[in-house]
Every structure is written in C-alpha cells, then in structure tokens.
Image 1 (cartoon, rainbow, N blue to C red):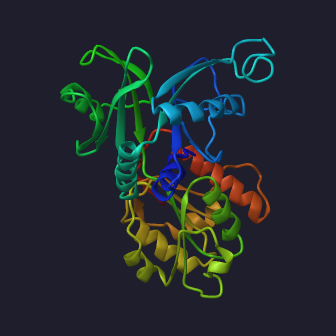
Image 2 (image 1 turned 120 degrees about the vertical axis):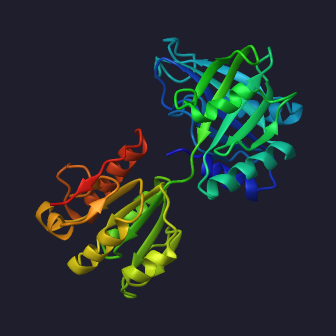
Amino acid sequence: MEEIHRILETIERTDLRSVLATITRVEGSAYRKEGTSMLFLEDGSQIGVLSAGCLEAGLSACVPDILETGVSRTFVFDMQSSDPLSWGEGPGCGGVVHVMMEPVNDRFADHLCTLKHYLDHHIEVMLVKSFASDGSVAGYGFLTEDRYLFGEWKGQFPQALFDWTSSGDLRRSGMRFSSSVQSDVFVHTYYPKPRLIIFGAGPDARPLAAFAAVAGFSVVVSDWRPVYCDRRYFPDAESIVLGFPEETMQRIPFTSYDYVVVMTHHFQRDQQLARLLSERQLCYLGILGSKKRTECLLKGVTFPMKVHFPVGLAIGAEGPEEIAVSILAELIHRKNRKPEVVIHEAE
C-alpha cells in the first residue's frame, strides 16, 4: 500500500524538519515502483520504505546535507552491480533506481497538506515535477480532477500538462518527455486512501479489520449488536457504526473508492444489506458464505459491479485469520489493477 497517507499525516502534525524521497524512475526490476515515497525526519525516524533495505541507509546519510543546504537532489542507485561494495550485498534487485530527495520547507509542507485535504475528500490529485540540469526540482504542480492547480511552477503552467489529467496513459507514474517544457517531467497520481467497510462484527471480522488497517485501508465496522460492535475488539478501526442496515446506510457516505465485505452470518440481514448496497457504486463488494447461500440471498437483485462470492481468494483458508488473509489478498489484488464495471444479476 502506498505510504503517502501516513507521510502526509506525519508532515501535518510534526514540527521536525524532514526530507521527502520519491522514486522517479526504475530501469529493470526493483522492490518498489515509480511514485513510491518515503519520509526522513531530522531525528532519524523514517516513514515508509523504498527498498528491501538496500537504499535507506545511503539516503539517510544524505539527509543532514539536504536539510542544511535546502536544495533537492536526485540520486541514482545501480542495483545491477555484482560488486559486494555496491549498494546492498551482492546483485540486489537487478535494476537502476532514481530517487529524488526534497527538503520539506514551509511552502512545500503547505502544499502537501493541501494534497492531504483533497485526498481526504476522495479527490484524485496528479503531480507534475520539472527538473533543472543538475537534477534538482525546478518546479511542481498539483492538479486536481477538476483542474485546480496549486504548487510552485515558474511561469505559466502549460495547458498541455492540464490535459494530462484526462489521459490514463499519461497519468502513469514515471518520467516522461514534455514538449511544452522541452524536458522530462515526473508524473504521479495520488489516490484517496481506500476504505474497507465491514458489515458484521463477529469474531471473524476482528482479524480482517486489524490486517486491513495495517495494509493501509481505512476501516469502518458496522453491526446492530452492541456486544460485538465494540471498540475493544476493533482498536484500529477508523469508526464503528452501531445500528441496523437501514440506519447505518444513511450514516455512511459511500464512494466509488469503497471496499465492502458483508459477513454478519445472519441471512435476513445479509439480504437487506445486499439490496441496499445494490444502490451504491462501490469499488468492491464481497459476501462471506457458501456459493449456494449467497446466490439465494442475491436472487433478483441487480448490481452495478461484480459481486465477489465466496469472498476472498481460493487458497483453502480455514479459521478467522486465514480467511482474513484470503479476503485482504483479494482486496489488494482488486486495488492494484484497472477498474472494472460489470453488471451482475444473481439468478
């Protein structure tokens, strides 16, 4: 899961100086992809990872100088080398990784907090950065879905770059040539934090909520039974919503970024939830239970998306923890591939 949300939360609340490191280019294979970020704070603490441990020590050693000079720099790590004195021990991942390191000054921190504001309101934001000949950042612009621009860009922001917000191919993370500025620019799209809404707070929901929170999902748990729907059992959940399906549906603002898993183990409640959820456009909907049971409760209901049942990847999972792993694996698989809109009608 992308660590940018934890990074932005840290920048918003800390008074410590920091350096933001971002992978801008990968040649060959690498542990993390273009757009992955990591935050180095002046007290030595770190948020996120860029590699399996090959790059962090070297980057950390550069932090004091970047904080002192206030100048961004780009570093290139060749992980193809078999020289044991090169980055890492031995051959490494076999790729070349370009990392941009930027001091988070007050102005940049303000823009990153603005980025957080839009992401918190479920709005995608595309970043475009230009570079000077020495590899330092010359300018950057954040573009929202409705083409609102904020950032630091010398001169007028090119119209052609505005048009990139509507091009799926051009929004892919990485370096690409821009004829408007006659140089390569770095492009990355930030997406709102995915949210997992779990209907059903039984014992088997607890590991799913815990694992999902660790994996970077914002977790909401809902149930009509107070004995189950208790903060003690879901300490990592963003919120707990107590109530029957008709009540809670009015209190949860659903979005197309939401992942929903129904696991109440109560046939009539699951049936109610399925009917109510069929009126929402979700990113993912999964229902726990056998195929026969789920087909029965979905009978006659049409959905604007595919319904996953039995929920989770077929890994032969047994017990709450293994089932939670199978469900979370399917959620991550769905998150990391292109969106699909499928009309599903249970028979």
